Image (cartoon, rainbow, N blue to C red; front, side, top):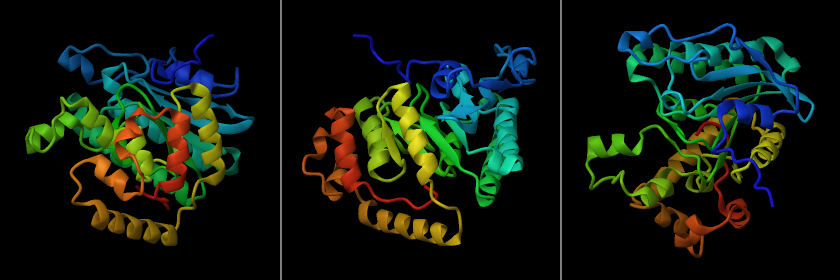
Length: 302
């Protein structure tokens, strides 16, 4: 029996082509435009014609969407000037299009900001978040999909928190600070980055789904991500003051409830899961059944 295409193993272009309706994707600023970073040659680093960010339009179940996909195999999907500008541009294009675009899909796969383009990358993160919130305030929807090799770290983690909704797989990880960063600054006693099981329990997709950081859980297949994205396009929460206040109250309650926990399994037990240590071993269907029962409801920002 043929194995369904893996989201984790696929390239950014393969994810886009397989996620959208067949033959519907039209790339903006494609290979012929060669939108390369102007900074990497200073450091004698290889460039890529699309700077690791693919943007364009297409349809998802016949609904018009704009899409942006990060290539985690190029510089870990890190944000630089051109990389970030392309994402900002497509968010602004969606706002200008109004009802002509059903949603913007962002296929995250990033370790954060490029050290070689630190200032430009940080500015790009701020511009992206502004463009995203302006789009959402105008009634637009932004759905993030996370399940690639690089995860969603640093500035990518901040941006993901501004999305209308997030889909994550077990392979996806979401955090502002990566494991090595935490260990370097706080010590191995605080967080052992070599303990892969600890990393996945803390930052991996199952834990993020149970806490309400992610709104849907997908198996590691293109079709599973597609189905989850379609569901979130329909159910994405509104973006207004009442939803923001409700989310702030939820996060304060969560911190009070779980702030003293030393391991994710303590949090899962606190959520009422009878066998929390078994969560990492559950297949997708069994996990979703549990998550749908106990996952905290999110209202907006994460």
